[in-house]
Length: 208
Image (cartoon, rainbow, N blue to C red; front, side, top):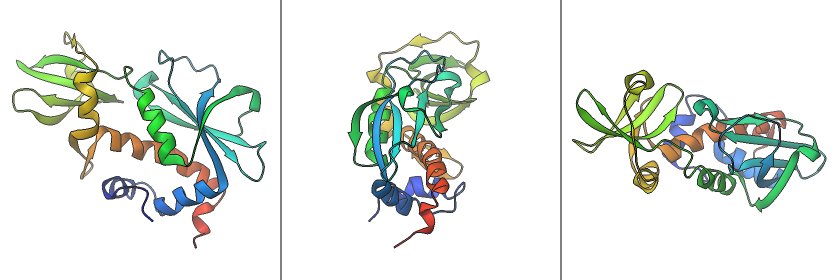
């Protein structure tokens, strides 16, 4: 069974060698997946973001997770051996893909959505990741990746969130040779953090 689409797999193959579908399936068998809050005093303006909580089925005292934040536009950070009193579970999910869907939805309203002029051309800014800005050239309606310093000192006109949310799931950008939407790109980054847990338990070595 395939859990992850081919474009995300192609992108991930540049960074990991394990089979991601096997990892997702093994994770469903070995962990309780949930969304909630991991309180580790991370200073982040993104209140309301969903964190990922991962509990070992055989030993439920062992809790790991993936912290979600917008600080520095890094978004996901794997956490190992979290004390139970630092975790608040809101909702359980059947697996990591469903968990990601809830995490992604919680980003609504926390991402950049603005119009800016670059060299007298209007661009819609929809997502930032590190020094990279995902944008749409409003003259040609074509996706374009800009360097953050290109827009750093530019005056930005804030847009309604709905103006950008659809673009996150439909507009494809060429990223390291693979065409991905922002949502697919975020899923790939999220799964890279999840794979850290898979490797700790060597789940990828237990294929059936």
